[in-house]
Image 1 (tube, rainbow, N blue to C red):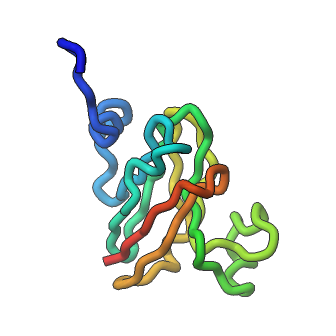
Image 2 (image 1 turned 30 degrees about the vertical axis):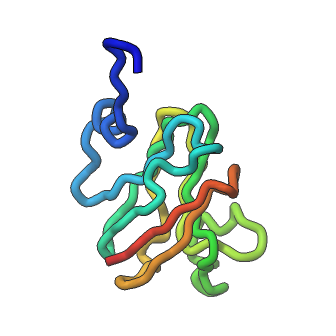
Length: 134
């Protein structure tokens, strides 16, 4: 590291740029070069009923989508985001956001305490993580 140059964690960058996340929303973060390095928060832990705010600090667009868990056909008819997916509708989903943007993760009312759920970026499927619901 060069003298006088300091590194900063992605979590600290989130706090500096957007302020501390709301107490009721857990942060999920994508940092620079995420298409290579993955999510800066590859494990996100929430309580049942808690929200997630997804932050993207990479120049490429990304999202936060359930990888292997899908809504029933009945539940999918009620979920507005399901129209964006052909076939199976993911249990939870975020909009695709660009650099410096954030968005709410939708569909978290379907996740259950004591369960784990895989998530990924639909733009870069190698970007994966785990949502743990305590």
